[in-house]
Length: 302
Image (tube, rainbow, N blue to C red; front, side, top):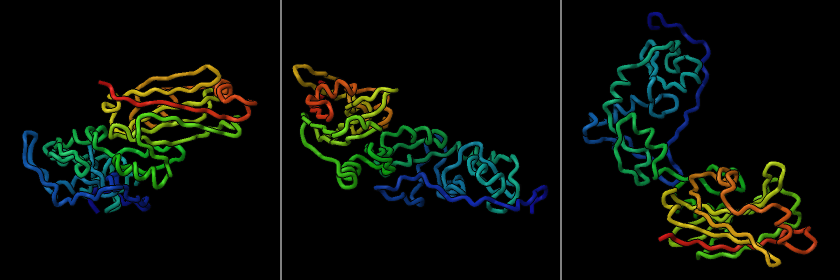
């Protein structure tokens, strides 16, 4: 036992968590994480890289980096998880910072964690995390809204996933004419008719249509999302139209990137929104069954 250290009798077992993307790619061999020295400092070698990994969660540590009296290091989140007890030697962690390791980290350059997905930029250690949070090569979340799907990946992977695992209809073309039918339109309860994917201009678009409660009012909404980045989505526009009995409602807008969640787009009402009474009027008949025909088109802005 180190001088001044007190043993912790109970240490909470932590289960390692990995934030490394492993859905459609393989992990990069750490032995290849060796970069040429640049203007930001020394090259990152395998040994130093391992020193900066938290022994509990295995992710890279950022200041403050904590250490126990015996010198075992730990990230801030895991220090809280193990109740301030070193998981290696079981000494009380105290409030000791490993300033030397923090200083070493400042001189390192590392590749983006999404290197295998196409990002080949190199970043100073403390800039790497901020970049990765907005890296255009980071995996996309599954755009399916009918269930809480935790799958993520690149666009080709997600297109296959939507088709095979969610049985989503796939269509080629930039115009569409879809009919939505529900026998009891009074059962809103966030009912979802989703999803249709269109392959248009060599890109993929997700057409959503669903019922949900807007405050106390039941409404229907239809909107389009683009399977790609926001700056690419802004190169396209789309229109939606629904009507009947000599009347129609139209909407024109810009598709939202699937970086924005389905719920975020829906709750912002960025699409064609119809109150239930108007939707039933367009449905005709005895207004006891929803029969809506939504047509639209997608075009590329010049």
